[in-house]
Image (cartoon, rainbow, N blue to C red):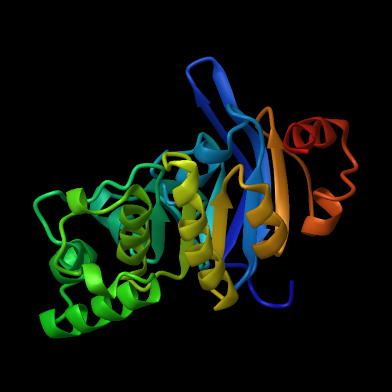
Length: 255
């Protein structure tokens, strides 16, 4: 890659007790690249995503985001774990959208979007509100700024969650199965929002089972199974002509 990667992962290992979930993941993600991670349940996809922003601490290896090692600093030849406050500062450059929307039920849509910029990042209130409204327009919800989450469909709530993640102006966006909790008829509107973000050059890593989205929006598809990257490449290669039997077996379920 010509530019320095936004994400650089080397030898990433993670175990929960005796269960080794990640077994040495190496991955670079370039600025503006959209990487979609596919794989069966239990393959380590979501765990790897959570390790990127240090929601899970890795056991071995390292992960850098925008040139900064997540969760640790190097003192001479020793790694020192950062404090929770320092880790929270690192996370400010990463937006994350989860399976569940996790909106504050007692706040309006706009209040949900501007909560972090005002309360955590100490942005001036008027500036945060102005940008929050721009983001709601971007996800097609300008008319819902005064609504409460309970008044929205699941797809609308997830689009609010995307706007909320964008409100911190992240360098990197992570999506962990963002449509898995939605009714089938609501999936399309969330994927359309994500395609729009991808077309605007936002660096994104997306864990999903939506093969159509991977085919249309990804610059690169990564297939994981058993805690390792089995293969990766352009969507037309990995999805259209996979080289590995495990990838072919997985994709055969979607034909």
